[in-house]
Length: 134
Image (tube, rainbow, N blue to C red; front, side, top):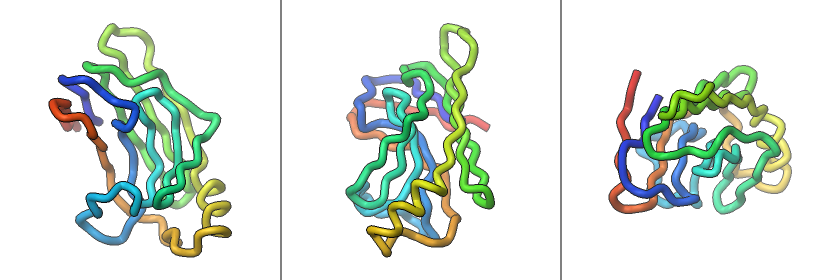
């Protein structure tokens, strides 16, 4: 769980899971494979420079919100939840990223075949701060 605590979020900011067998991740976001939710709440899969936007979303992420990502690597699904700072009910969405990765692998053989990786929070804008929670 992460909480965005300050600054101004951009559409490139978000929370997700990078699919990789190596640490650290490249600093070039266009060279990773990931499943993520961006600031607007849209859940996407990235394979290098290609981004596939799903029809699944959560409420837009705002400063003060807490966001969790639960990934089931065996089933290739990710659950994203946003708890709003204003106390409104949480917004949760489950996304089957496995089928999106299969389609991408047909066109891009370099997309990782092993489902393993790590949590990531992407921040593009200077001045944005986050707090890592349990």
